[in-house]
Image (cartoon, rainbow over all chains, first blue to last red; front, side):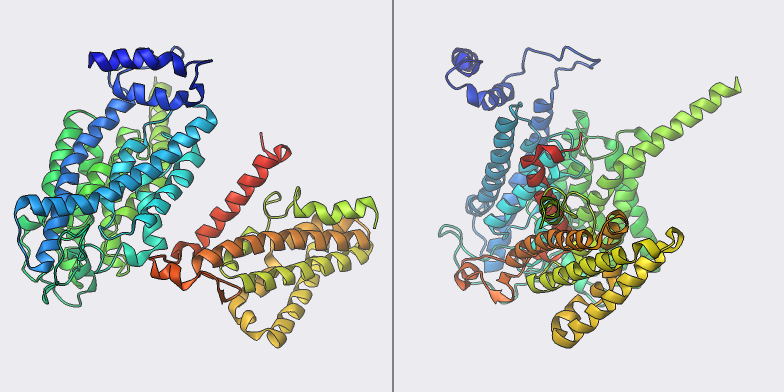
Amino acid sequence: MNFLRKYIDKIKPNFEQGGRWHTFRSVFEGLETFLFVPNTTSKTGVHIHDANDSKRTMTIVIIALLPCLLFGMYNAGYQHYQALGQYPDFQTTFLFGFLSVMPIVIVSYLVGLGIEFTVAQLKGEEIQEGFLVSGLLIPLVVSIDTPLWMIAVATAFAVIFAKEAFGGTGFNVWNVALVTRAFLFFAYPSKISGESVFVRTDSVLGFGAGKITDAFSGATPLGQIGTATQSVQITDTIGNTLSQWDMFLGLIPGSIGETSKLCILIGAIILITTGIANWRIMLSVFVGGVVTAQIFNVIGTTPSMQIPPFEHILLGGFAFGAVFMATDPVTSCRTRNGKYIFGFLTGTLAILIRILNPGYPEGMMLAILLMNSFAPLIDHVVVEGNVKRRLKRINKR
Amino acid sequence: MTEKDKLILFNPLGKNNPITVQMLGICSALAVTSKLEPAFIMAVSVTAVIAFSNLILSLIRNTIPSRIRIIVQLLIVAALVTVINEILKAYAYDVSKQLSVFVGLIITNCIVMGRLEAFALGNRPWASFLDGVGNGLGYAVLLVIVAFFRELFGSGTLWNFQVMPQSFYDAGYCNNGLMILPPMALIIIACIIWIQRSRDKELQEK
């Protein structure tokens, strides 16, 4: 690491005031502080100083997302070869998934970071690190067959209108990755929902060519539940019944990163032990989801109501949203009680949308976005309630 | 036409635009702009209603007791809107069906009442008429711009003619479904406001 530090110190004067590449100062600063913890701290106001600055925070979230990403790649290959009726070795399967997922990651980062860097240069500000996580979340919440140009358009839309227009990282009202998905969902519904987009059936760069087996149907478990008219047997794409264990491990069709609950669990453990994400929100999202699903289970008149609560949590993007999206520190509640309320309502709404609206087999995205809008209000109520309670106590004396 | 008249007529097109600066009539700008044709018809209808209601009210402004002026204004606007509605039904039935209730709802368009209250009640007929035309045109320009983008990207057509070439669709291009939904109209208007304010520093709120 020493040589890198020395090299950066050597080229640094070029980027300072009056230097040759002064215009690109913010790009340089962004990269430098990304590689090394900066030596400067804020000089005004009261701050809690911690070695863990926001770049390090983002890096840990990225690490927590890696299991989901890697498994998502493997699963993309697995689903593809299963649809073709082939079962090649691990490397081939992973390679196919890697080749089909990697372009989405690259496009998301190129577009998002491109806009962030440009805006930072135009405003003469430092480059904010917020997109590091959003850029990886976006590929994980879209379907594998979403065309790359759509991801580019949606990412640009989300970064400009959901983030930069509000003032950049830390000021956004809604989770940027979910706004990207929402844009895709409403602008190009046929490319992010339905039966034909969650499993890649074409070859990639000449890999994995073949004919689809007759038994193949690309419907996701939630899609099957959504369209069923009577009690439903959830199957994978070629008709084998799925057990709860299969749903937990995640070799099922779905958005790229959301299928494996095991990897999400690993991510959740990393996030909670490092103190990056809040366990209160995660817990209350799950509680909200289970309680709501249980209530509907008792009513039990439609196939989606009959799904047991535990399976509701294992299916779709519920767990992924609860662990990585609802816990976003910028867009969720800040007060402790607010976090419980926020999480519980998110879980409740997600299951409500799933069960009651046949048009949306998955409700997690809409639930989180809706609760993002209400988060400041919840915080306000909690804070005001606290002020009132303490005033009462003082007045009693 | 004097300098002052020109100012009254052209100011609403830019610096005093009813939608982007006065923030009036946004609801109908969201509702009718998914296609260019109905948006244009709507814009013309609203312009006619504002212009003539301004004119009529200005002519009788000195005879109206201030207590009942709102009722009188509503009566004038309602009469004009009914006439417009009948004309559209007679000569442009398809568009009239597309616009459905929104023609009738011109009565509630804030621009109409806003201009009556703010201008026609205190100015001479000719100036009031010009003010009505100007504000109508300011509204029309915005509607046409918004409808242009929404129809082009939402349906791939302009005035119902296919504009996006078939080769685009063959290459994987899709119409943007969000453009058809009202939220996108709001975002386009926001962009126009953004551009206008960044070019014209006077309009920026502190």
